Amino acid sequence: MPLLLSGQKFRTDLESFGCLAILSPLEGGAETRLLRRLRASGYQTQITSARGLGDPVVFLTQLHGIRPPHLGHQNVGRNGALGEVQQVIPQLNELLVEDKPLVLWLLEGQVLSKSELLAISNLCQKEPRIKIVIEMGGARSIKWQPLNEFINKD
Image 1 (cartoon, rainbow, N blue to C red):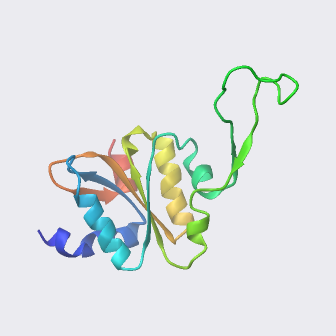
Image 2 (image 1 turned 60 degrees about the vertical axis):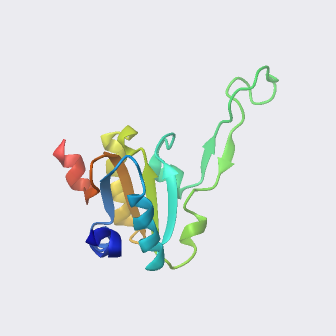
């Protein structure tokens, strides 16, 4: 299969559209081959799950606060009933320091809402160094399309 030999078509589509929705075989393997081809052509890669992202743009690119889980009795005088807010650095912050382009591969993208997918698509347009691939489910063979087309198809 020519795709698995070079990955050239996938890479050119990713560079031209910036954000792709992908359907890959459930047994796996195809996505790691594509990631290996992207790394060989000079991209940095990051794989993460779409579950628990919250606001994807803030989580990926901005300093944001999180509340750790409640672990029993808390001192009411210390941060009250809301709990302590901890500041977390953005996930892509340290990867964007270099001039190399970055590919973020999001697993389980089918849990994202339409508005979250639109926000991710807008992030790719604002920051040209970030390319995002979102796995939107399974298929018998690997298929991809621009994320905007995937969103508007529904």
